[in-house]
Length: 287
Image 1 (tube, helix red, strand yellow):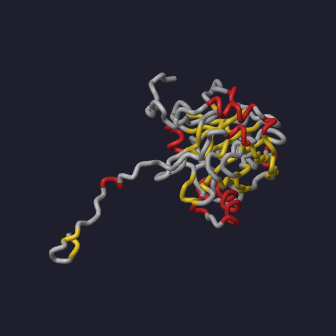
Image 2: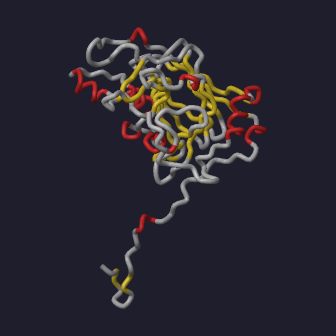
Image 3: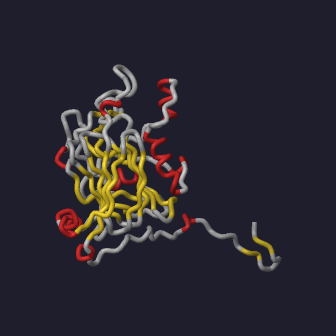
C-alpha cells in the first residue's frame, strides 16, 4: 500500500478541517436529542425522507447485515446533490466518522458530516476490503439486462426512482451513491470487488445534516452481498435480504451553539467568460 500523499490537502482554516469536538459531542450526548421519526424500509424497496438542517439521522441494520444505496439532495434545490467523486477526493473512497459528503458544482459545500459509525473499527481486511464505499454505484436494470437478458424492476436505481417520485423527482435525479454497510475494494487487476456485509443487528451510520436535505435509500436486492448476483454461482439472493431502519433526531439547542449551515462555494469568477462589449457608436453589439 502506497504512502504517497493525498492530492487534496487541507489548508489552515479550511472547511476540510472538521471541528471534531463539536461533532463528537453530538454523537456522545444522546441524552440531548429526541427521536422524531422512525421508519422500517422493507427488503428490495426504496424510501425517501427529509431532514432539517441541524438534525441527525441514522441508517440502522435491524435484523443483520444488509447493504443500503444512499442518495441526497438539497431539499429546496435538487440541482444541488451529493457528489460521490469529489467526496472521494476530498475525504476518502470509504467514509467514516468526521468525513463529510460534498455537493455538486457550483455549490460545493458539506451536505452532511458523519458523527458516528459502529463499523468504524472494521478498518482494512485481508483482501483490502473496507466499508461504506463511494467507489461503486447503484445496481440498475440496464446493466442487469446487458448481463442476463432479463428485466428486473427492483434494482437500487429503480428503488430510488420510485422513492423520490412523490417529491417530483425522476430517474434523471438519481445519482452515484454512498454504499452504506457495503464492503468493497480494488483487486490486483484494479477492478472493483464486493464482499459479504460485516454489519450486525443494531449497527448504524449516523449523519449530521448541514443543510435541509431530501434523502433516499434503497435496501439493495443483493441483500448482504454474500451471494453473487452475476457470474459463476449467481442466484436470487432474496434469502439474504433484510430490512433497514431510518431514524431522525432533533438535537438540543445547547449542542448547536455557534453552528450555522455552510454557505455555497464563494467562487464567482464566471470561468473567464466575458460579456459581449457594446459598440455604442453604431448601436450594435460587437461581434
